[in-house]
Length: 139
Image 1 (cartoon, rainbow, N blue to C red):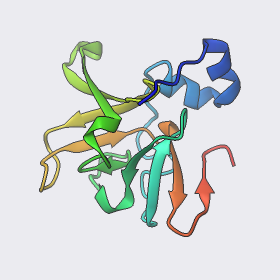
Image 2 (tube, one colour):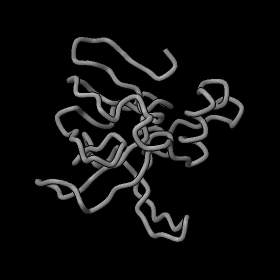
Image 3 (spheres, rainbow, N blue to C red):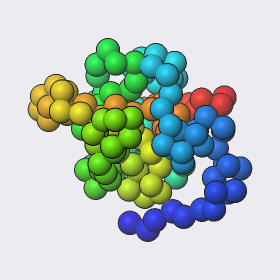
């Protein structure tokens, strides 16, 4: 997989302020405010920065946490995991493997078959419905 590399200025031009804050600045949107936390439509969630397909609606579930939650990515190779020791906690950060966009965190309290909860910021995603429509936050 070829890495997508852009300058800070290029990312700022491409993304909304919120998308930039979350994906490039490792920010977190407030719970229950993101566009996709309660989306139930069939489709694919792609990285807002590079368009890489990351998650499917088939793996999405309502965890009650206020962010889109998935029990698995489309392909583990599409997600990079790093230890995040910010905010006096130890968590596992998840990033897009193609462009290093911050997506959110993964926790070991999800449903079977994986037991994992990929807790993802809506601002880091763009949704493509199964019927071909793309939805994004700034529409």
